[in-house]
Structure formats: C-alpha cells, structure tokens
Image (cartoon, rainbow over all chains, first blue to last red; front, side, top):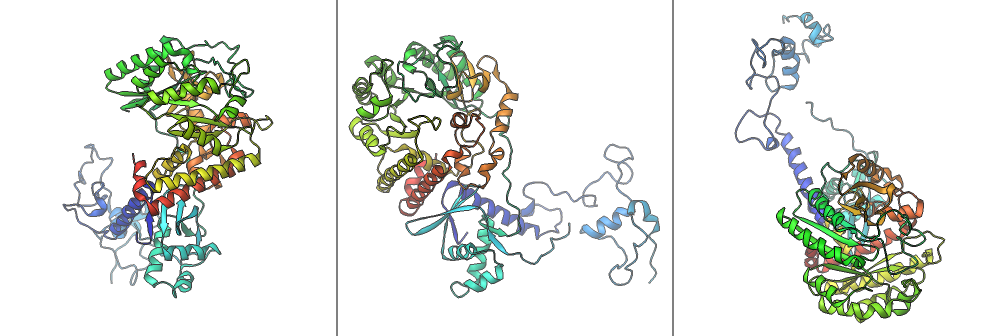
Length: 122
Length: 483
C-alpha cells in the first residue's frame, strides 16, 4: 500500500491478505491454461482439475471410476453445453449469434430434450 | 464461469472505523479487524470528503483533482476500499460473526482459590462483602483447599493445557497465604509433574500482604513466584476500607512487610492492585505513594465492582474524575516511553499490548475458555470471581469440563449475542467487558456492561492516541509488545 501505512500487527496481516487477494484477482485473468508444470500462480494452493474434459484421465466412456456404468462420462448434451459455454476446449456447435439463433429453441432441458437438437445445413 | 459483469459504480460511503490523531498524523482504528493504519494526504482528503455524505468515485476524483494527481486519488480509493474504511453505500453492514472457538482450545491459566477465608473484612470485597455471590461464611465448601484437590487441579491444568508448553497457575483466596502449606506442596508437585510432561508452569499469587514473613518472602523469591499485592494507597486510604475484622486499619501492618518483600524478592516484578471507590479517588496520590514511597514496579487500578446504591460505588462524576486522572498518568507514561524509560502505570501497558497485537475479541476475557477458576472443593468455574458458585460451575478437576455447559456459556456470552455492542467502535477490545461485573450490576453474567461504555471508549481513545504517538516518535518502543 502506498497511501496507508499499517502500524500494528493486525494491520500487517490485513496488508498481507490484501496483497494475496490482489494476486488471486490478477491470477484469475489467466483463466485458460493447459496442464503444465510449474502451476500457474492462481493454482498454487491446489491441483488443477478441469472438470469433465479430455485433458484429464477419466476412466472413459466404457466404465466409470468404480468399474461400472452408472457414472460414465456424460453424453453428447454435456459436450454441447458444458464444453461450448465454459470450457477452453470448444465443442463445435452452430453459430448461435449470427446464423442459428434459435438452434436450441426446442431444447428446454438438454438432458431430456437433446434429441430435438437438429443438424444445421447452411 | 462467466466473467463478473461490470456494474455502474455506486456512491462510496464511510464504513466502520474510529479515527484518531497523534503528533499531527491521522490514523484509522479499523472495526472490527482492529488493524491500525496511518493516513497520508490523499487518504485524509477522501475521508474528509466522505464525512459530508456518500459520493460517487467520479465526483470524488473531480473534487480532489486540484489537490492530488488522478492516479493517487484512484489508488487511495482502492486502498481505503481494501481495508474496508470506505465502500459501496448500499453494501450491507458486516454482521458480527458468531463462530465459537475451535474444540480443544487449551487452558492457559488456572486460578486456584486455595482458601475462601480471609483475615481482613474489606467492605467492598466481591467475595465477602455486600455483593458476594457465594456463601463463603456458611456455605458447604471447605474453608481450605486440601493438598489432594490442589494436586488434582495441577493434573487438570496439565491435561487441559494440551499442546501448550507453558501453563500459568495463580493462587488466590480468600487470603492466599492462610493456606501457605498447601501452596508450598502444590508448587513442588506442579514443578515435578510439569517436568515429567515436558512442560513448564509459571506461578503467581495475590495477597493482602498481612501474613508475609521472612521465610515466606524467601520462598516466594526462591520459587520465582509473581506477586500481586492488593493495596489501596497511603495510610488514610488503605485504612478506610481495607480493615481487619475488628475494624482496625491494615496500613501499619502491611507497609513494613511490603518494603521487605520488595527488597528481597527480585526474581519477578511485583505489582500493586488498587481498588478505586468513591471514598478513595485520588488516583495520582495513590499512584505516587505506591511507586515512589513504597517502591512497586507496577500499579494497576480498577474501579470497584458493586451495585450503584452502595456508598462506596463510584458516581458518574467520580468516574469522570478517575478518567481525567488516568489520562494524566497516561501522558506521563507516554513521556517515559518516548525516552525508553519505565513507568509503572500498568493500565496503559495492558491496553497498549492489545492495541499492538490488534486483538479483536469475541469474549470480554478468557474466562471459561483459556482461564478457569477452581473452588476449594475442586469445582471448576468460569473464573476465580465465580469459583464456588453452583450457577457458574462448568466442571470439576476430577471429572473434567462439562462440554455442554461450557458451549452453552460460550454461545450466551459471545459478542454476537450482545447486540448493544454491535455499533460500538471499542468492541474489538472491550467485547462487553467483565462477566462478574455484569453479574453484579445486572444479575446476568452475559449482559454487556453498558454502565461503563463511555468510560471504556474514552480510555481506549486515549490509549490509541498514545499508541499513535509512539508509532510516530519512537516506533522501536512498540517492539516490546511483539511477543
């Protein structure tokens, strides 16, 4: 801090915390990272686990972690909405901004209605 | 996963803090974190501007841009926001968190009431006087703690101090020295048992000094026992309320004994503990007498705990006079500290230590948690002032702490339950104050001590100013409080 000077011991701890928070905030700007060593600064506190995506070893489509089939990786509807919207590994979906704004119009609940999503023929 | 959406900035307003000045510098005492920050020009200007009412960052920048570069104003707004001195005008007030201490919190200090008999009959005594809560005269509890109970208490302390290397054992009464044989045996036993457990126990006791004899003084010195003497001041003051059962004053008896103690016992600093009443309010005279004439290293003064109708209860005017005399002594203390010299007014030192560390208390004191009192029969109570009271029992040295009772106590006495305190800036240090004081005043130990709020805030403010002055002029001195 430049304009406030911490005087007592608690102030020193507040300053340290504020610095840590600032570093955390900066680090979240580096949102997209590959699995790499050393870890990016915002992940020093724990391992990097991208959820449900192909960069980590998941048991796969054939068997789940228990060796059964109850918890398999999720099918196509997850690729469409999870990867497309929130993952750095983009699923290929139609261009909903320009050409096909209504592509998901019939699909209120992806898990139930995913069959209603159709192919697009430009 | 979506990035936070930028919103139009809300007006900024002041949040919770207490501002004070020392040597021309301005400081913020943050509430409830208890951090202290020194402000520079731009930060003072921003706070002064917001003092007039909430304002948007843009208009604040515009208002101050003739005095400070834009970059400095923006940085300062950011820093003041980070320490929560200012913030969004609509942001909800921070709630007082009601998290209880973690399980297994260690006991660090145990006060053993080795007897509930006393050879004096001080009118104001909270143990025997008009405000007593335990029937010390006709009650069932033994008059003296047995050697066995004292040893069981030591075992209890060693076990409950858990991972702590050092534990503190304080002997208390009644008049502590009436049970000198048990003191001797307990100290020897505690030393041996602590060594076996790889720990260390530090000892102290409080006495009225009437029973000090050369062999006792020698034992106290040899065993490095910290001694606090209960004494009220010069002869006319001491003989007013601190009297034997026949009404005779005690000054002439204790004076030579104390001088001898101070001469022989050099292994630990010896302090005086003064009870101030409406009948003895000359703080300055008392302090000078005890330090200069008697030779005490430290003197701590506390107003008597009693109900308002007693004739020795301090009146509101009396409290003002007491406070202004405390301030004189506090200024003397500061002048000494600026020259790296000792001054024996321990009230300042104690508060400054808390300010330096930045304590923000959930409880008025450690009673029932890090500190407990043991009655003569081995019952464990919140503290020595409640020892022997069935209503405030939280266990016994043989059966241990009743965790349900303890947790109930911790919930009821938490600052979160003292809503009156939630708007007070002094709550990090006061946290509602002494449970015994509250019990005597309101009949409820969990009540906040509202009758001395003004006094506590004035005193805390004075100590903050002293702290600020030292931070400006002799910051090295503050390192003494680092431990």
